Length: 532
Image (cartoon, rainbow, N blue to C red; front, side):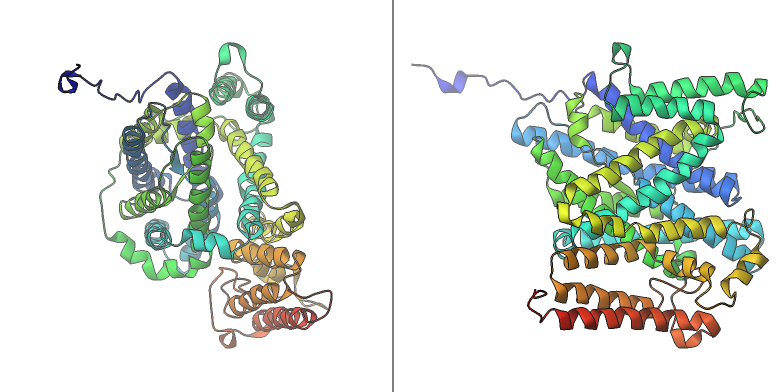
């Protein structure tokens, strides 16, 4: 008889690094590098923010948040593999959240810098205070996500998908997609070649010879062409060779964010909806990973992204982290846990040692922009696919506030419209509200507005009129106090009776309009055709 005590069981061994991790690393790493590039580009080139503060103050903490989150997700893959005795577990990818990083750069950090300078601050002090505001915003988002990690499912249930995904898709259309498209056509020869390679490999899903990674090919070919053609004067604009300088910085925990806490409160209507979107997104991507065979705990995924955002904020970061959509795609390419470990180390150490900022300065934005355009297209397509067919109109309806915000950003740029002219247009007399004021009001609080509009429209389509009226009531209250539709060009919340002139009419007129529409729907809900 066999003595079971002498039977040796083979020790479980998780193959955490395989060939597929190389492809996974390039994909995840370039996603993060692209987001950092546009964070820097928006601040430095659009708002004329000092580059040194971006690279030595903002980048280290922001990159450290990616390092922290990816290390935890790597460890979670090891834990799940051991628990399930599964050698094919793929780690959850984590990186900088594209919509909120670009959105916060365009609607929080940049405008805050301009506003502080308009108050008389010199450029350096305004830049430092903007950094503090960005840190404080991340800390608040991190704390908010920590709390909502436990009730994320409840948020997902009460807000229709059309509101959640529609607002995100609108950001994809207006901010993530259109703004980079300008960069593509700013250098059309290299931009369109890179965009073509991205569409060829990622949209059409056609493999390059030898299965060469499409993202790497697009960046490599575009960058090489740029450095061949630009010095010869064959591209538009003035060629400036890269500085070949490394910007060192340490992500040291600090309480500097407290200096910007009060100023950051004005941007809560923008920041917190971005946090909600990543919470819901985290739930969705965890579910998709479960379908692919990796049963991560949703709460662990959400708590990790919340902690990494909080850590980034305390260490000087200005962009939140999130689990990326596409874990099944990384699994399909054969990745395990090595790709998240490599990405975390590359981005995290690069933010400290300065080589990430070197790559950001060296690779033309026209070459990186197509990656964001693909992300924008994917977000928009997924929004229409994920919602019930009847709700696609609600998704489209939620795009409009994002377009208003894009117009506001462009028109408030003093290089396009001088400040004096912009202020004149805000109060231009006419038979209706001035169009510039309407653009400002519709654009302020655009994410929350898009959520509420999408949710209202979805409930209306479902003939749930009382619920649609409730969303209109919430919209009216938020409008009255400037949480959304703020009449103030800088998006401040307010008590409407403290405003004057045409600015005071916006909260009263808009709020009354929403209330009247809500009352009308409530009455109609008692008709035969409109019962809930």
